[in-house]
Length: 106
Image (cartoon, rainbow, N blue to C red; front, side, top):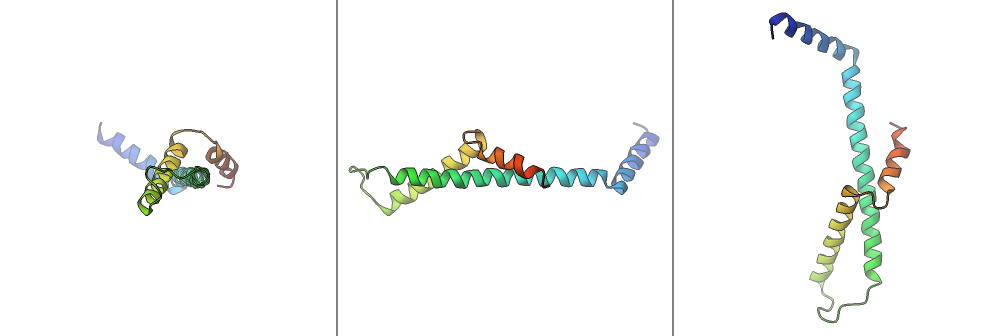
């Protein structure tokens, strides 16, 4: 690469930055990513609430009984499952639905 081509690349990038094209596109990508993460987070909260309600319907385990430690463990496990399900699969589709609905407002 010679100096003149480097100068041309620099000038082109400088002109694009002056026009704001790259800045606006980077901001839009950042906003879309933040919206996607927020929608996945909402889906995780919804799934966690659903798992908590489902677990409340299951009878108490006679072998281990009910303890504070077991409550913490099941709560953390439900939270982990909710986050994993919302990120890795489209099980409920709530996050994707919200994203499509809110994407136009960016």
